[in-house]
Image 1 (spheres, rainbow, N blue to C red):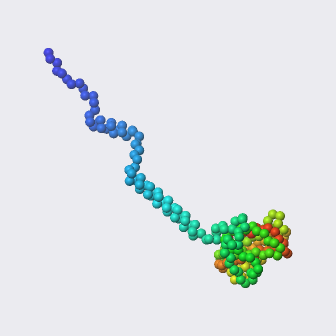
Image 2: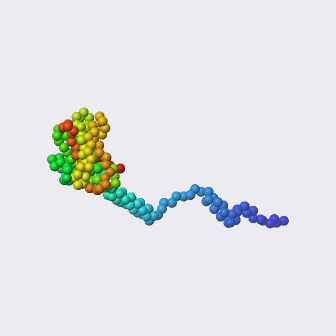
Image 3: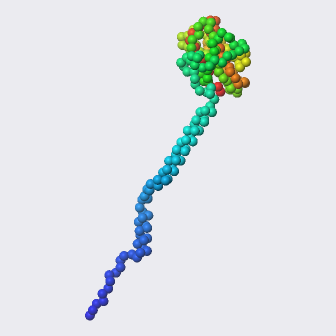
Length: 203
């Protein structure tokens, strides 16, 4: 008797199951990193350069908008009178006193001989409290005296000793008028020696 030949049983999944398994397998694969296209790199580079230019420009605008007198010009090294322009002061300001223009904040180290007087002029803005301090340097016999003159050249304040037994001279003043002010330093009773003059940024 002839036996009917049969095909072996199909153990392979149909196309639908195969595709589903393939999708499942692909979902388990780690995501692949794709470099952005060249045109995207150019866009990112252009945006970075633009942001950098904006930041630099903003910084320059901030610096240029700062008041000029906030920049340090006078340092611990004595500044020669020829380095900065002299602004004549009239009124009560002594005509025999040498004048030197300074910018704030200022720190000046110099020497006064007996009977010598020296003046410093600076621009002050209203609404701020200014401090002018004169200190005898270490080992100096100078007893400094400070006098402050307004834009009209009239004396506004005077100080010899900050406190009893303290030869430091200090003037504190809230300015009401913008203009050029002058401070005069000299030695009390003909004293002489080295001094430090401080004019910090006003409050």
